[in-house]
Length: 563
Image (tube, rainbow, N blue to C red; front, side, top):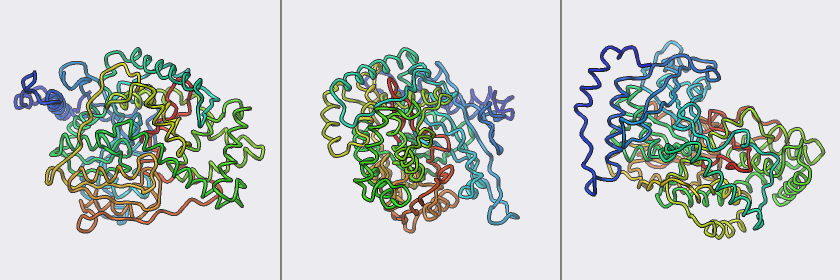
């Protein structure tokens, strides 16, 4: 359905608008790379602007408390063929409240739509608009329509699948820190089978699920929302295709926030970024063990990080011999503690579960680490999109000997996550469709409005070097660093300093003084004992729509954790 306000005039409006669209460049050697897709984006955006989005009640499972509305926007599967096959992306919205939370008698002016993406690849942003009910977001929710969406392939947006969800979550599973040649051979076979499954279940459409098309989809969504210029917040992977958008469509940008940035350098996409990520998680694992050791009087897992590591390995050994509840093995334990590498809100719960298990009570560990059958279909879909996007986005080594050499070296100094990261991404070595050439993200002085970059200094999922790289590539951007912190995604979290910079930028267009980089002290460490429910409600939080790490191992990617 289309927006009623444009129903009568849509036909003539569309024809008039398309008459002014520049024809695509001639084909052959003279056509600039991506010229056909750029023309296709213009055509699709013009259509979307005429049609709008017919917002109404959300589908079952998405109609949560608040005023959230849902609709769809139509985009081409292939932007080089804008009149070819079309797909629908689902969109959610909570209109601006216009209520000043600091003065109930004052109405604030609406500033348009704030579009958000939580990362992944493979995460949905459909629940993002509900964040306006939280205190940290009320000022932004007053001024902006909060808009989330499910990117192509995710949820109801032309969903991708690579295997039967019933086969996705296999538990218990092993997770050897130093895999044997036999285990490597087994995982190679599984990666090949998974890649074949992606091609079989998706057909010729598979090659069109990549970051460049995600950036193009974002421009069509902008137009469908009636926005002449885009206000966007991307977390984690959302920063990467947000940066692509800034490079492709700089004149369409109003304001952009990049929270927990991916390193956008073309040579990093994606093989080298994953190596850097594995190395960074080792440091974050050390942070967690230091914190647990500091609270040995609560958890009894050891007085030093080395003692805590021995307790963890003791649990792995026990679980390998006898899985907890028949479904939590070393693989599930690893996944649970990997999440603590993303968010320190998880530290108390993980430490308590490990402590209880070693003292004879497996229930807390089963509760946090056990697979959930009801989530299998969503997790399989998320994993399929993750794999398709990362494999399609750029070149990967096609010889396992390269992976084996690089990761064997890395695992000696960073054993915590290195090999699990290999198994997650190994289908890309055997990917059956052509790859994209990564775009050189870069804007010159005056080409792009000033943008805001947020990063935690010890973020493992997107190491801090990526924030520095992005700042250097987007002219006029300013970086706000949360020092000595490793939480992944810091906007709207517990750090008032960070939130102050976000509010000033989004509400007033104001960047730190003299547009120089700024620093914020770390937010307080979590207190031992019961974990805070729901985390800290950061925009990058898994609780806002980004899927929790995939607990399924076996033939599927292990953990949806690129960003």
